[in-house]
Length: 287
Image (cartoon, rainbow, N blue to C red):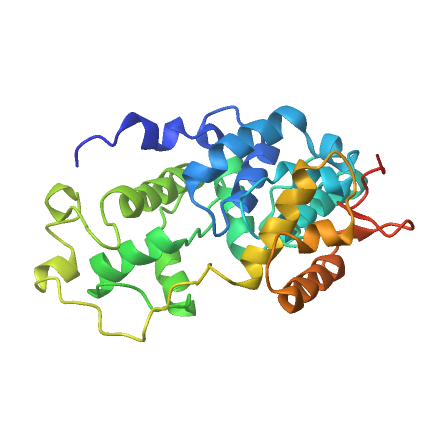
């Protein structure tokens, strides 16, 4: 396989470089949940400059985490990461634990994120299965164009069976397969001619048959509650302090929908009503 462009090689990502702290890896993995690398990297760099250790973030108001999340999407992840920082400070001496079972007890950390942190931060033998890994496995091993819409236990078991037996090779293997899927074995235009698995890929050897599984539906954005909530949070992030409810409703034309979205933001803890009737990010002092 030809060399990947420098900007997309694994070593170019700051959270994959030697010396990146386990906290930096954890932050990156939470940010990368459902968000492309290109959008994550600049936000991650600013985040780590502001809060280089869990204790630094834990000492900040949760609203600052939401503000610094910018436009990464799914902003509840910012609150969960702040909550995880508090737990790390209070229960783990400000350090990120290496054990998957302990990592899974942190707010916002599921099986995938725990495995990724164990593998990439601590070199543990952990099974890391993202969308790219699933696609490589589906084509190279099972001979199908794309994996099923939802992760299955069989996929996780297959990924585990393919891992090197030693801890030292696991992180390299996981990154290699992820990058193979991201750069070569892509969903729409796979570069089979430059793939190191071309001679053994079952999908290619079968003539690259088209996907014939369950329908794969993309996520809508225009006009959705997610878009409305995003605009409200953007206004609050850019404001110097709390704003009135009518200012928030003004970002959206459908008042019933904006009412519903504002109620949801308050219920999720992303927006905090103040005694004077204004609203702000959680934990931020009124201007």
